[in-house]
Length: 178
Image (cartoon, rainbow, N blue to C red; front, side):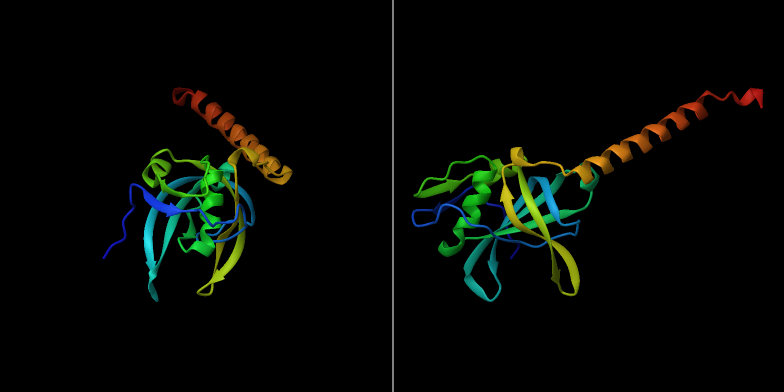
């Protein structure tokens, strides 16, 4: 049976600690901090434990811009009570205040709004392939581009600008003069 994205989901955060750090699986980009947007979510069940449900979030990198087309980063948030801190962190980082009680999570709204958040990605080996794993989330407003990434972006823009100038020069040549 295919999994579906529920419009909302009721979750009880009454006994969940305020904030912890944690993980997921996905495409591969260099380790570091990124800004991502939420582009999808599925409610899934673990194959070996039908009672164990989780949300599998699909994230797309938006910063640094050069990794926009790197692929989807998957981020798993378990719905087991002892792991709800991870979902709480995620929801707070996309802009929600989570009270210590059962709440309806507006999953469809989060996806439709393409909510932004920051993530720290680390390398993780899975089935003999290196993938990027979300090791932490944070508010997108706290993202700071590293000097190396800023230098790379500036160099790419400069190269692009030079290439654009060359293209313009080529367009100015009159074929009849040849």
